[in-house]
Length: 405
Image (cartoon, rainbow, N blue to C red):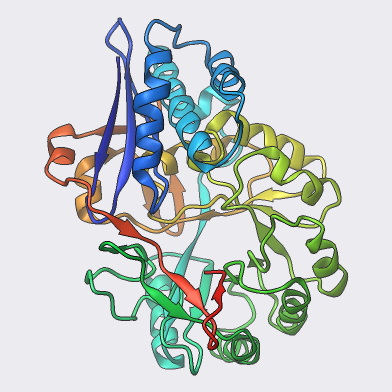
């Protein structure tokens, strides 16, 4: 059997549960934030009928069958659906073998995964308090996001008011029939951000690894300018500095700055990374197992990246479910070219739906030693949190033009 479960503990998740004729079960994450029902329908109407009767141990064959037999390949809906199947089959294989998935991927290359947390603030005192809080929680690397003077609402700043009452950087998708409209001013952003990092370095010193997310909002030359302006503050990485659908754009960025670059959370296949990796235009692969087709292709892209000394920085916000996070945590533990893992703790209600063996201690994450992925679905709890329509926000410039969010 294969069942699709859509639940909404704090936010919407799509989970695939595969059951074998011997009674083993496997879970996969198919969540696509703001378009969850599209993936649920793709799974229910097209993929699930193809799974019943197949050999669950043939993971690679099943992946290739689902990818190639549809003819219309790639895209976030298709790849999230395939990802859920791939994760669930790895989960089953681990349970049959009696081993955690990372052991099936070659065993551990490290004792645990270094993580980074999300600090933010509307002003410097609030930002400093957020950084201190994350340091107290054990994080040893910090992503810094800040409000910009003149911009009313900005991605990643937790203290902004949300109609849902949730932290903004915990779940930016607002419940309701229409997406929230936000404003944007690139020039104001480019002026302000370097001053924030100067203040953070003066307050916290040179040793603390700092990261920043540009969220695809800059043109290539604007991204180059920001990367160069941030060089004195020694960033661990600048993320998503410009829309990477145009891979060639990173040649321009790379030619102007030595700030390390991370990209790929919206990518779906190795082809999206092909030029970026081959020409060494990035330093970190940001893909998420959930939107990249699962564990199998993510391992392949990291093997490719290893040839060019490019490391992982897998996407790990709370719109990747605990199942998806566990999948890439097992992979991160196994591969040699691991870099860092984004980590935001899921809400208490989410953790009642997804029962996990994963642990976070002293800034490091470990998937645990339970066979498979180490996550089980509490279906009764899931049923108590029905789906709620929600959309991610979008941006407009001062003249009304829709801009990248």
